[in-house]
Length: 69
Image 1: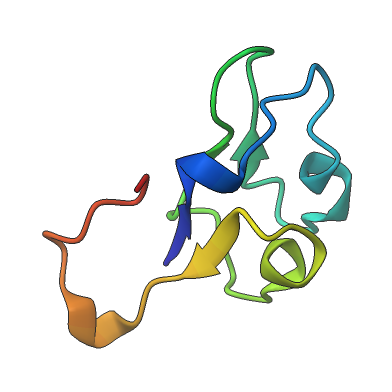
Image 2 (image 1 turned 30 degrees about the vertical axis):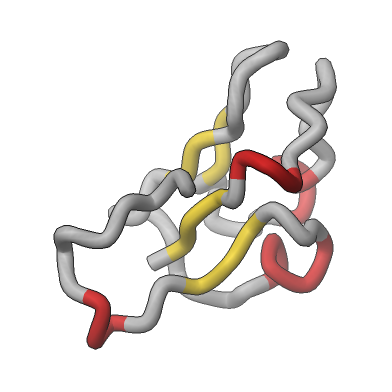
């Protein structure tokens, strides 16, 4: 599961992480935080490697962990 740290996101018009996600799991509305569809996400971590706002939520954290911090 992938989350986004709001304080690290620039909310730019064109979130470049979208082009790095091979599963098409990242969507973005300009001016807002990107969203990760964790149903589509394959946990390849390319978004985590590319952008400091994206982070992996350990499975042990459970479903109650917020995806956007």
